[in-house]
Amino acid sequence: MSRAGIVEPSSGLLQLSGVLDYLSGSALREQGGRLIAASQARVCVIDCASVDKSSSVGLSLLLAFMRDAQAAGKSLVVRGLPEDMRELASVSGLLEVLPLET
Image (cartoon, rainbow, N blue to C red; front, side, top):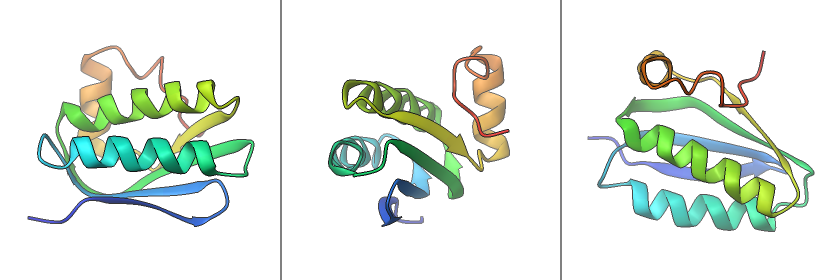
C-alpha cells in the first residue's frame, strides 16, 4: 500500500499523493488544513495527479480543504483529479461543486 501525503512544493501548490482512505484521511485533513492556512498564496491549487487510489475519503478531504481555503480568505482549485475520484464525484453530484481546473 502506498503512503499518503500532502506537501507544498511551491507557494500555493499542494500535492496530494498516495492512497486516500480511512487510514490516511485524518492526518491528511490536519496537514492540508495547516498548509492552506499558512500558505502565502491567494489561490491554493490541490494537485491530485499523484493520488494512487481513493475512497470517498478523498472527496471529503477536498470538500474540507475548500472550507479551509474559504475560512482563510483564499480561493481553491483542484487539478489532476484521477478517474476513480471523478467517478465518485459524479455519482455523488460533487462534480458541480468541486472547483475543478478546466
